[in-house]
Image (tube, rainbow, N blue to C red):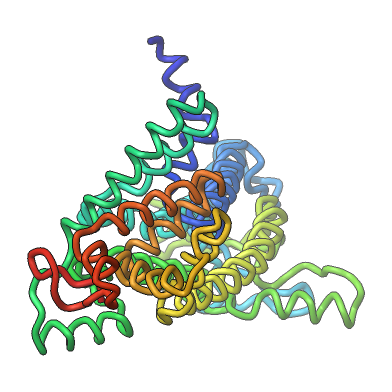
Length: 409
């Protein structure tokens, strides 16, 4: 494979999107926001290498070399902003310095990295659950456009994989400490594979990291830009509402001042020079960071709502039961009172992680395949010795005893 083929393969959307083990709110952060931030970073970085990244007005006696030195000095060191109707200060101008414009590409790339970190942590630690969600989704996607016989084989393989995973991570001991830990895990999403809360808890933690990151971006940019970014969008809307135009912002001034000292062998004290400069890039930086302010608000709102929705689905057992029953009803598997009673035990058999896995698959695969998988797991559940014995004796399924003391609580 040539270098060109390798580069082209990594520029495809599927490579950028990565695994199908998350939902739209996660992709809003770790895909779309990362693409936006990297694009802005490359745009500003390209402008930073242009000859007219900064232009300064200076005295006529400046030679070409002196003018080049002055311009480069003002770019490398900080300039400061003084409105045209105010006097130029003669003393220290440290409080007026604009310290960020040289580092805008770097800070945008760092922000993009922070948006990607929660996703990387999720994919790194999710494999410790004993099953790879992405692989299961790929298997389900591959079974959708094949012949019926091969499709049934794929579905049976997926069902067997999930069923073995559930059995391998089941709690085989039952005492007061296990019951206490189980109840605690349902509320706090403790990362425990035996209690069926590992994937669920890890995903909720990842959601919290996504939310904390996007909120933390305002504090990060506040520190980077001198403490004004948190209310930047509100100030811009206020200016537009009252003055009906977007004026030059004091936050991103295009005309600045630059002061520097020149040492000479002829004069003991350095000579201080002050020139006026223009920062063309601030014309774009102003619009970029204004857009990012509104975008971060959108991402934070969507992530918070999505997090609350996931917590609502997982914290109440009734919601997990509703999810399972919806797919069983689609195939007419809940016809009798016994079936409806067993469906509750089936939801307990799946536990939080099992239902979470099916919910995640449903968000990334075809609904018909998900229905086949849920029904396949239902059929295997009915074949469990503890269930068959209870049905034969016309007794309720015992949650505390069975083969190897398995529990379906």
